[in-house]
Length: 118
Image 1 (cartoon, rainbow, N blue to C red):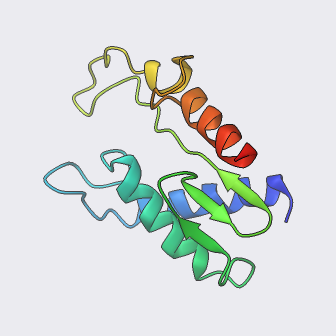
Image 2: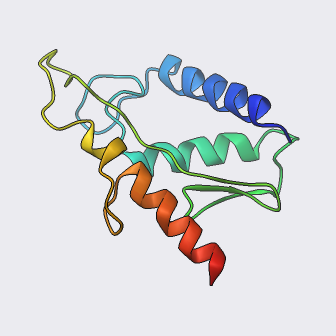
């Protein structure tokens, strides 16, 4: 399974989740308000229904999404603005904070590298 195919499939499912207009908790409908764990769980469920992924997709704490025998994928939600349209403070920290033990994308990737060496 090639990375461009996975990216397209993930994008298609995110569009489908957003288009469903199912609200998350008390927030506005669409994919925007979902938390990362809830969104990855829904994404995993939908990918598992596709024949190319059947029996191969697993969600775990590390990695976020595992396509068994092929890919370990980490996701981060980047929200530079809140649903009120105002800028969100420190939103980039979840992507770029470069210290191990942090929950940033870089920190998650460091955990995967350490886990792989064990």
